[in-house]
Length: 302
Image 1 (cartoon, one colour):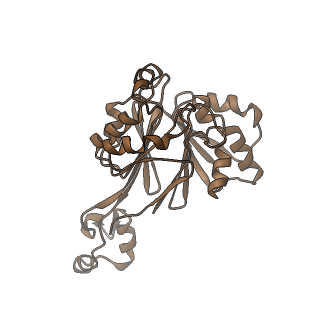
Image 2 (cartoon, helix red, strand yellow):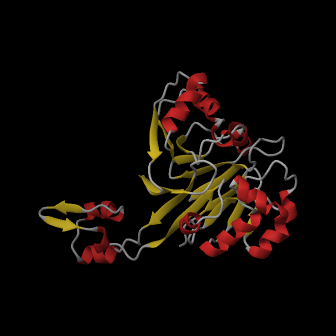
Image 3 (cartoon, helix red, strand yellow):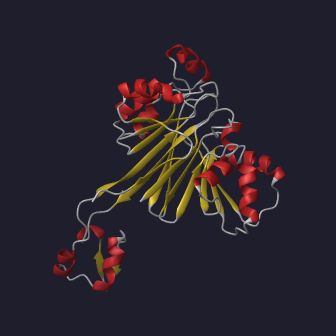
């Protein structure tokens, strides 16, 4: 099960009814935050979630509306007596940018660890899931992220017994481990059926449409893209500001074969994003005008 919550849906500046864009996901004891703009902590409290269990924070880029909430978040974690290390992932310059922000949060009771993205595409592997960063097209270096949770095939007890595999090795093989014992090597494929469908969520804001987004979002269960502008006459502004229109986001979702699309990162001048609901669904039927706190629980197919 993967819990997904779009904490805020605003771009550029927080509004009384719309916090800045940030996404939080929870899976198998891990809590992952993507972006941490001003107001992220408040949005988290409104959701009823806590920042304390967060073990990974990813940044798409270093514009203020995506990272200015970090010092307060770190202080909150420190005041809660956190001692576990916190991993930060982001484009080149991550440690320098965070170091500058930490002038107002200099002392923390936990370690900060840094992983910088050094190529157009980069994969980070963790316990049971992968985070894939992909470069997009904004006014500064910017990345989108995909979380992928693979799922192995079902364990075949009859095959294990027929092959004489010791019972004590079954659980390790089921977890994908290759084992050599008494001169015999046992591999997971000896006892597992065909690989089953996993879970995939793709997130990208602040970009023009790119092939990297289409490729990263291929067959994704949930695609979260910016819909900075809704009016067709603002298309030229989207091009000049290196942002995306709602219509362009819907076209990408269709081209990628996404199951569902959430729009986010609305311009502060867009008072009523819901006004475009019928328009976006005429392009991609499973498009949603997301609001702060928009949530979903993704489950594996049986």
